[in-house]
Length: 281
Image (cartoon, rainbow, N blue to C red; front, side, top):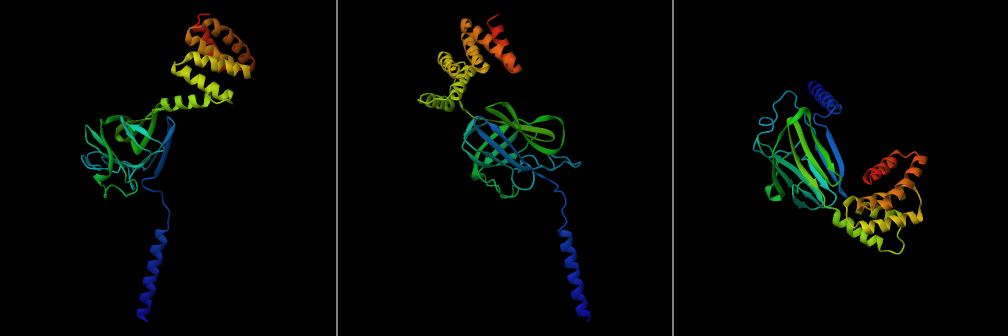
């Protein structure tokens, strides 16, 4: 009988422990995913966000001179959907483990082919794709929960910023897109059935880059031939104004202004005002 009671007691304890194990609580280091377009590709970062909780972080909880998983739990991963330039070096499309080695005055950032392991315990230097140095800086404010942010500088360049406690470290990711866009423009504008959207986009890109403005003006006029809207007249106006051809720019800006005011499009009204200022009307 005593033996039977002991068995019941063991079963009761096991069930109790199992019950406790099924209680859901918020993770100490919640997972996060951040994605942003850079150039013609996407950058995606998956990581976990540990908190300070009154501890000293860099040089203590995260020792100086040792490989860090750059977060908590699984190794932080960074994925590039297409080829990019990281800190001046071309990196192929793919997903990489983002390791770092923090120090007081310099960090080493590591891209490694292993983006799946738990922590940095099994880190293998032979799998490194690229290592580079960055200078850490003091954050503008105290960061309780570690964060990785993508700060856009322009459409083709961004900075990856790792922030925790009072320290941040950043590195640049960019994509060279000009040659690809130029090749696409040449291909699509050479077809016999070019749409006005293609002509508009091609002319506007040349305008933005300040190149081949004669060709851009030809394409802009082709847009007007098919669609006499204020945005079409404005395209001709700004391309001609950039050429210094105010004899063409002004009448097109005036027509665009008239139509833009009727449409109530403040953005195009301002664009036409800029042409008037450029041509000193």
